[in-house]
Image (tube, rainbow, N blue to C red; front, top):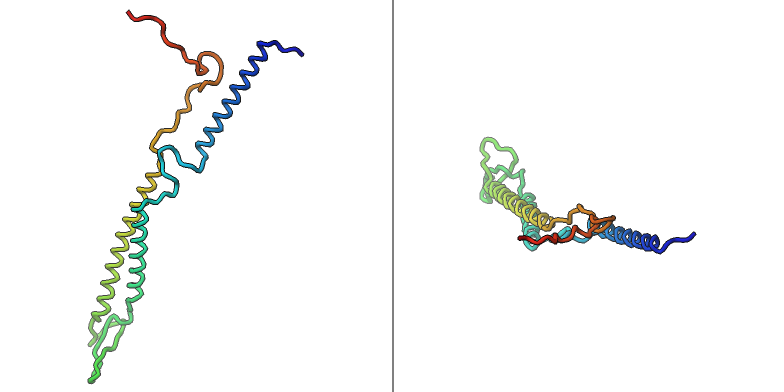
Amino acid sequence: MKIKKSRLIEIIREEIEEAKFRQSIRGMIREFTTTGTAAGAKKSGYQSKTRKAAQTDYDTKSADYDTKSAAVDASKRYRRPVGGKGGGYTYSSTGGFGWGTNPDYTSQVSDRDTAETEKDQALTARDAAREADLQAEVPTQEPPSGGGAGGFGKGKAAGKGKGKDKKKKN
């Protein structure tokens, strides 16, 4: 079977165009599936110094809250003095006649409540820093548009353009 030179040239051009097209598609697939970041975005899982500091602050305040919560002893909510020279108190979780509020218990509850408020504030700050880092991961540049022939295909629409208008303006 004989192939004319012009047909051979046409086949070679088509193969080159197909190869370029496949390479372009591979590049687009790589762009959308890569583990790298999109243009203008920070790496996935990015943690700023602010976020790390907020996390450390939250961890510290959470541990402080846990410690102060453990210190609250509900069995010593009320107390009454024990008679005699040695003094001292008898404690109870339920009050009644002759029992008074234990100031140590009240102080422990107050400390725990303050620690809980501080923990909640630290959690809010940590979440705000996390959200800011997530926003930093969003790309700042628009992806390339998929329109147009991109230089593939046949004829003038195949990336060759229409050319410049050669008419002179009067």
